[in-house]
Length: 366
Image 1 (cartoon, rainbow, N blue to C red):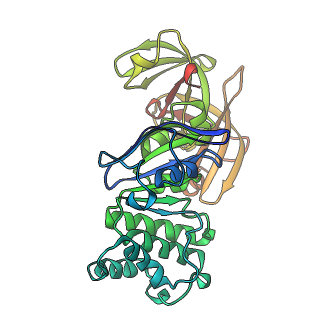
Image 2 (cartoon, helix red, strand yellow):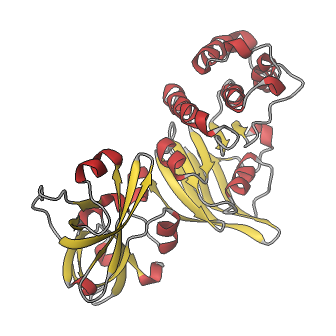
Image 3 (cartoon, rainbow, N blue to C red):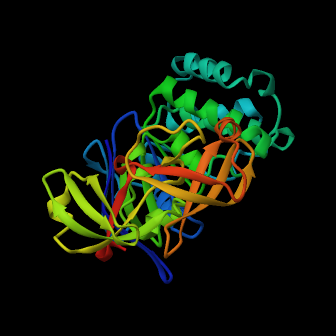
């Protein structure tokens, strides 16, 4: 178990404030946030390159924040991989064993397994200057895993890799983590990378963790406007609380005169009767009905198709609902579904908003 407890650190005018994160053994935890959020600063604090001003960093309940970097049993792969340019690939990989005092012969089986797994056997006598970005990343991963660290830390692991190679390296890292069961912390600004790699995810903005949780909860149910905005959610609307039960909140979407019963496990703690709030739903969770093949679903709205955008495998459809006041709704669908629906600008369609995909934000949490 890796834990950040109320961690605070300061660099000039920027600060990390009360960082609380727990990473279970064998999990991959991803911290995602925009550039300048403090992600790399947090990693530098974790590995001992910067000092804490408050709090603790625990590995298996032992406070490592008082230890020098080399004694923390953390393998850190920075953005530029930092391979030693005057060493061959083989020498780079074996470096961790040499400085860690590991028995070379005992580690050899792991080294050979990693070399085969990462497909770098043909690179062993090359120097880093002769490697591509993807090759450097593979070598850096091998070097980081050979000492069997308590924690593997990856800082923007795909930033130096060509777009055409990113999917391959992303899948390789996913397979690597599943194979070796290494507890891993990744930081990235890329949402696709975060949700592909992470078992659990934390959203970090302005030196603070806005929300932490399992991948699906973070993806579909952000707790704040800042988190929802960072996640790219456009469909956020105003409503009023009409009723509260143990596990749900009934809200009135006044602009559409529509009542929605939204599942919510902490309803009584977060909301009160007549409270004004906002609700949101991801664009891919809005269901658009195929003309002539309508299904019986809840909360059906007639919609006018205003714009269509093609984005490779995904299409974005912008529609308007409502009679007196027009409300914009954004819908994302896969290319195959878009071809089946075959709508065009100006068409009238039916859409459905299912309450189980709705997240609620009280105005005080904005």
